[in-house]
Image (cartoon, rainbow, N blue to C red; front, side):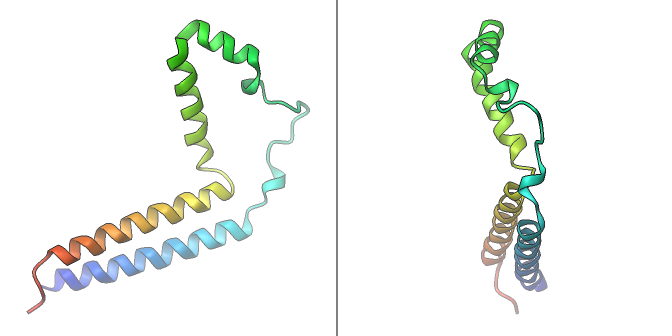
Length: 106
């Protein structure tokens, strides 16, 4: 069964590539270049926005709006490096655990 060996190699390769990509993104991203607006407070962070959103959609709309903003924030800047690192560790661990389940090489 060469599949076990291939999965172990793939898990190491995914982990190495993910850690390298995350390190490059973390080192090269410029956090100060984003969001250069004239307003000190973003419009979605005001009490008026929250009240109007709650009027139209209830408390669930507030929760889903916060969840949506958190999830979209994972794909920008240094948070992207953390997201790539977490995903690569999860995929690598999954491939390694699957390789442990398979029968040993002959």
